[in-house]
Image 1: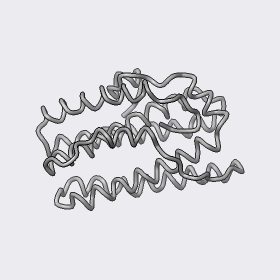
Image 2: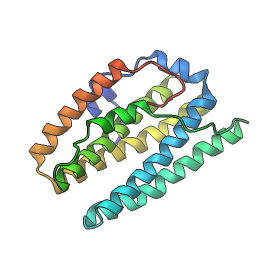
Image 3: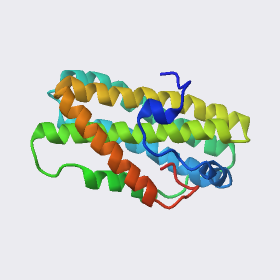
Image 4: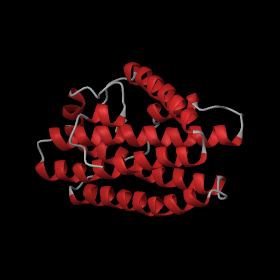
Length: 202
């Protein structure tokens, strides 16, 4: 997916990132790169968890298996960037954004309901990550790091699309779209309530 338009329109996100976030991130490179590394690591493990929980979904398994490898490769790339800059991988920190998304997931319910919310959660995380990486690719003064994040932005856009496609593959399309709008509205509330911090990807 080539993001040649406003990311907000393409991804459906209802609230764009505050432009000041890029400036805060730029002065906290060790922290933002560390947090990014852990985000990639968690993305890989989330895909593994989906494969384990829904191994009967042949297309899901087939499509997510290479994403596990890709996300772990991204973790290694970010780790390499930290090392190259003489920076250290800091401790993993609590991800308030992702935890707030988890709180919105249907508790109990049918297996299909749980699958839908897991896929939409992952689609939303990828969408917001894509939007944040676009901000970094356009706003960082470090031209190398800007290009670095442009590549990540394009990758996240593809993952976002895949999770939505998988939801529509296995579940009623109207139900998927209705629930997706609910997720987007909830994410807007989360973003309005979140403290603006430059040491976090989300």
